[in-house]
Each structure stands twice: as C-alpha cells, then as structure tokens.
Length: 544
Image (tube, rainbow, N blue to C red; front, top):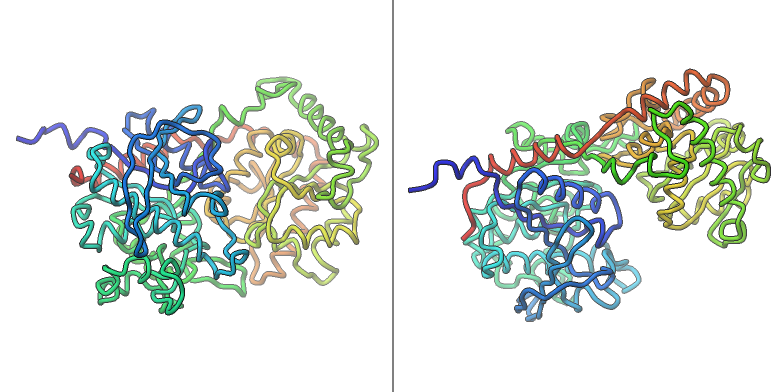
C-alpha cells in the first residue's frame, strides 16, 4: 500500500541549468539557480543540481560515474563530477568536445567560428539535455528524482526528449517545471541544415527521432512561430512542460502581450499567444526573484552602515571618497578600457557634493539602448552630460564600444569602465547616490535590489520586475512610459534631473527615499516556498 504521507512530503527535485553562481556565472540566471537551490534545501527539499562541466569552472571534484552519450551520429564519453561551492553541491557533466577548449566558456560566440546565431550553443545545450535525459533514464544515482526543474532555453531540448522521444518514453511520467528567465533569447536552429554538419540542426542532433518530431501535432509545438523552418527550444519547453514560471509577476503578464516597438514595449517576443493560453489555464505564474541579504550587506563594509546606525550617511560618504581615490589610481586613470571623465575627481570636498549616478550593467541593447536615443535637444547622453552630477558606468557588452566612442567626444561628467570587476561593482553600489537602470525590458533584475540595500536610490523604467520592486516616490523613481520611444527618452531626462535636484537640494526628501530603499526586502524564502508548492502540485511519482 502506498504511504498516505508520501504525497505531503517535499519531493526530490533535479534542477537543470546552464549557469550557477560559484561555478559558472554570466548573468542573473546564475544567481537565481544558486540562491533558489540553497533556499530550497533549507526548507527541506532534496535538490540535485546538474550543470554543464565547462572547462572554465574553477573547481573539480570526484568522478561519480562515466558513460557514453549518443548525439548527432556520434558516441561521446562523459564524466559526471560532484563539485562543491561554499554552500551547495552540484553534479557537472564533463565532455571536452562540447565544454572544453574553444568551447570551455559558458557561452560561445559562434560568429568567431563562422557559424550562425546560437549555432554552437544550441548544439552544446542539446547535447547537455541529451546527457541529462540519459542519466535520468539509466543511472541509479538519479533514480529518486520526482520533479524536473528546467531553466531557460538551454534546457528546452530536455523537455522535448522527455515528452516526445520514444527513446526516453520512461521519462514521460516525470513532471516538468520550466522557468523563463529572459524570453529575448530562444535558441532557434534549423529543423534541417542540408549539407551543414549534423550539429547544426534538430534533424542532425536526433536523426532517429526527427521524422516523429516533424509530424503534426508535434511540429507545431517545436517550430519557431516566425521562422517556421526553425526549431525553437524555448517554445518547446513552454508547450511541453507541466507548469511554466517566470521571474516576476509583472513580467508574467507582459509576456502574454505582443511586442509594440512604436511605444517601446517588449512583450512575448512572438510567443505571446502560447503564453496567454498557459496563463488562461492557470499554468503560468510569475515568482519574484530575491537576493541574498547576507551577501549584500553594508554592515560588512568598512566602515559599516545600516538604517540602525545614526551616522549611516557619513559612513556612506566615506565609501564615496574611497571610490574617488580608486578612480584616481593608474588602474583606472591610465587604463585603455576607461573612457570619459568625472567632475571634480581631483578634489574630495567638491566630488562629495556632486550627486553620483552609477550603473553596473551588461551593455546590451535591452539595458542601455535608451541612453543613445536622439531627442529634440540632442542625444540623451549629450543632455545627461550637462547635468550638475557625475555618472559612472561599469560593464561590458555590445554597446560598450559605442559608449566609449561617444565619451571620446564628450568627456565632461560621464565615465565608462569597460570591464567586469566585482570588487569595483561593490564599491559603486556602496558609494552611489542614484542607480540608473533604464531597461527596455527586465524580467526581474537584481541590480535594483542590491542598490536599494546600500541606500543607492534606483531610477527605473517600470517594466517587468522593476515595477514589482521599485515604488515611485517611495523607494525609487519611475520613468513614465510614453507613447513613443522618444517620449520615454525625454521622460528619462526629466526623471534624472528631478532625482539629481532631490539629492543636491532636498536632502530630507532624498534621505527618506534612501531609508525606505534600504528597508525594502526581497528574500528568497517566500518564492522558494511557492516553488516547492508547485513541485508538490505537479508531482506524479518517481521517474523509475
């Protein structure tokens, strides 16, 4: 007889993802996978975390099993290592052909190898998905898994194999939760690639299953809604998973709406009708990401500060001076990856009096393209360059070169440091007065949460998770969303000007914003509880 209490017990969950903080991190996906896993374990959920074994991963561990995986017409040897971070354990799948050498980083620039968009990464993550499916099917180590939690398009092919491939028919009873982190990246590849290598297409990856995948109604669940000759792993996972989540309530609503470029609105990126159907049947939910308040803690700084400290403003001011001193070192002043200049950087008292706006960001179109918007009185950057304030941008990305070129002609009060430097990023959060985050869309965002923790008041476009975390006039500033992109750009100028005036001329008003920002909390506890509830609701039983 079945145990009557088994259904109430927390299930054994396998979390499958491309990134995890402490091992392989490029963006916010890594933070979520790590922090959610740690919190779930605290709440009593048994978690098995599985990641690709990129060569760049700085730690190794014991090999717990080896096996062969058939993919794209070839058999590949894999080794599964158990590795540990400071507060978690993960299994990583080593295979040099896909995760070593030129392919040893988390993501690969296919253009450098003469390939098309997603060409290398789509094949690498399809191989990873195949390996995971085989491990679940055949290896005793994973027999107890009761729920599969897949993250972003990188794991979409795992949902495809588990639901539609006859080779993995035993996995069809395994419930799948699929979490969307960023709908802008969907991993599309051709269904067929003609004379191209087998790794270039869905047919090449799975020649035995391809005829089945292309039969209706399966084909409609796999093909890209725009480029119908392409396979879309993001769509496949959304269609085939038992339940779909995303990383904020507002983003869950936005992605059910079509894009509207005229008013600068980014919605479902072609998948809105499918997502609207999932929302209508109650299988799409937005669960807000959180941050680790022990990791991001101003009381751990020197000098420390917090709301409970009477002189916290003074301590925060000391961090502004420490940053100024850092900016005057050869590491910044003489570095080739630094462009632009700041006002009064050689005078401590004057620099301290000027509002400091900071941005720690990936310089992608999603994040910063609004800064280059042309307005009636010039480009937005030109207008910001006339403000009585300093603006410091830290980050790399596709818009980095363009920003550097702009600052070569206008080096008044804006500086860009084109590097990834976590220590410097921490200094910006602690020293800044205002945090600039004018995203076109933002599924959740954690930078605004970190900034608030340190009393650095965020200016945000109220999209996605930014609208869920930043309250206009309470703990930050909203940029009003207009009917056109130019209106949004003009509103950003007005909002920044107002924030600068509040900071320099209305210290009581601005201080209240800082204190409410510092008091805001977005923890993982509630969201992890909600994830655990979903696991329980969709659980049908162990996969073996």
